[in-house]
Image 1 (cartoon, rainbow, N blue to C red):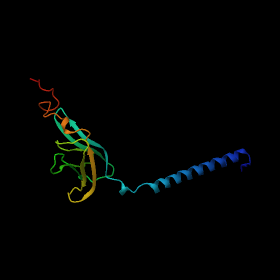
Image 2: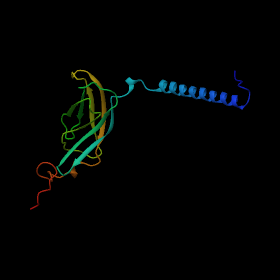
Image 3: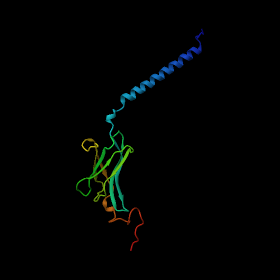
Image 4: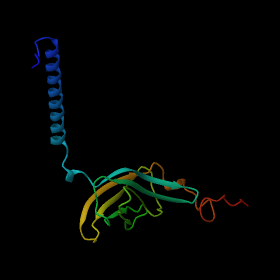
Length: 172
């Protein structure tokens, strides 16, 4: 049998064991803390809005507005993202729908071309997540978007003729 002795070797072995036990205890306490303080999975929103606003495309003479949202909680395939954009010229909201697929995590929705945008006025958008069957509402989000410029900066008509961004026609 080997004598462990009482010298520095024994103290060194005992110190390493104590450090290992203390490190394991610290890791266990940190794990318990993280698990105890994380939000429950059901409290996380389905969508997180990454950005949005107005787009003034003067070349084709159109103004639209919209947003980009990221799926942050799993949605059933076939769920409908429905956005009802306030019409700046009055009238019924402009509704746009897109179905959620398995391959995308980001969705961008924009209004059809709008008229009558007034600078510094908020325009309301209601976003609903509708179940595949069209009956159940899974979530609802309300957003407001403000343009820093008004419709008066837009040309009376498109500056291009034809599809895409072609050169403008020559002026007479």
